[in-house]
Each structure stands twice: as C-alpha cells, then as structure tokens.
Length: 294
Picture 1 (cartoon, rainbow, N blue to C red):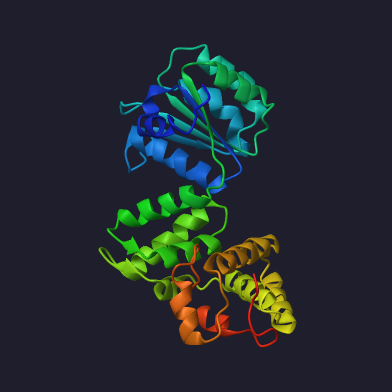
Picture 2 (cartoon, rainbow, N blue to C red; picture 1 turned 90 degrees about the horizontal axis):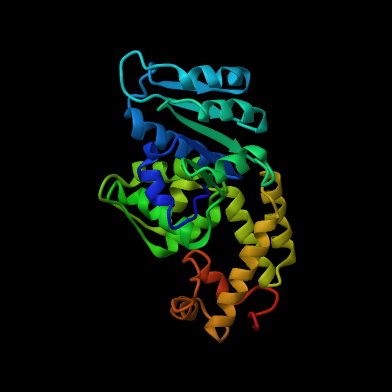
C-alpha cells in the first residue's frame, strides 16, 4: 500500500500492523531514522540482538532465513535490510507467501519508481511503501520545532529562518545540528539568532548569504570573495539564488530604501521574510549604489 502524507503519522505510530515496510526516496537520513523508530516500536529501545537482524549488501542472501526464523526469547522479530533493491524481490515474495509475524523493513534510497519490488509492495494491503524526501519550508520548520520541543526549547523566528537556510537536505545531518542546539540551550531554554549562529557556525551558508547581500548592494568585489569562500567549502552555488531571491523579495516588500542604519533597523522589522540583525546595518546604503531600488 502506498502511504500518503495524511496517513503517514498513523503508520509510523503503529508499524506492527504491517508485514513489510519499504522506505524509499532521496533522504537517506530520514530513511534510516524512520527505520530505527519502527524497529524500536516493536522491540523496544534496547534493540535486543535476538529480536533484531541488520542486513547489509553482503548479507542480503540471509533475508528469507532471518525473516522466517523464530524468536529465541519470545516477542516479535524485526529484520532491517539496508540498501534494498529489486534483487530482494524473490525473497520478499517467498516471505509474504509464508506465515510469519516478523516485520521486514527495507531501506531503499534511490529506488526507482518503476521498481518491481516497489510495485509489489504498493499492491499489497499488508505492506507499506513510504517515500522519504528532503523536507523544506513549513514542513522542515515543523520538524525542527518538534525536535526542540522534546527538550522544551523555544527558538526565535529569525533564528529558525536562518537555521533552515544553513541545513543540508539530509535528515540525519539536520537532527545532528538540532541536537547540538538543544545541548547548547539546555532543557527549557530559548534560542536566539545569535545563539544559533554561534552554535552552528555554517561558514558556507554565511558566505552565500554575504555574497547575496553584496550582489544586491552592487559590491562586486565583496560578492566574488564571499562566493569563492563558499565554493571552497564545497557548497553548491544553487542556494545563492534562493538567498538572492529572498533578499530581493524582502526589499520589495518593505517599499522604500534604507538610508541610515537606524532607519534600517526600524523598517526591516515588517519585512517578510525578515532581515537578520547582523545584516541590517548594511542596508543603510551600499558602498557603490547608495541604496537598493526595488
């Protein structure tokens, strides 16, 4: 069965209702996280080795054996298969043709939409096929807020917006950065923009942001330098367009130029998305053009 966004929370909350769960898509970190959560829901956080089998590419041939094995200590077993592909199709068909309560979790990043394995599992009502793709926009904001909420931590809006621009498309990397922020803030704390920038310190993203601001101000030399710094960090230049578009949209939304640093702080507050405080003084007037004319 193909699982859509509306039924996904219910499926993740009760993975034991399925015989096979297929996790596919581009976000390897999200696939790994959902597989781990599903397994722990069945066998508990201790990950009992008698009830959990982890199979990688070298041990794929043991899939059917592990899925039909009896639990020595009682309780339902879980088999996690990493880097699953169509080569496991026959084994999965044999497993589904037998009587076993073992939950099989197939982790298949990059699995084609034409995959025979995926087609088989999406046809069966006792199997779940879940797409795991990079989160963005409000979905990413919600995920970050929920992660921090488990530690009773609140994050300011401007800090959240800046953080989203820094994070990569991989869920495991995102969780790692959020856990770092949680440790920095402490349970029940609050994260400001300054806190997030101090803790994350994403030089590549900052360089892209600096390049975008310099470009919109007509400061070609500074823009080139910031862009070279970002490329040296191995950062893709594509986010530069997102930063530039966000800045130009905010400029246009504010309706008039910034002529003084004091005025910049006053006028930038109603902008959406907002300018960050460290960038607002630059809006008083670029060195080359005097001000930005939307």
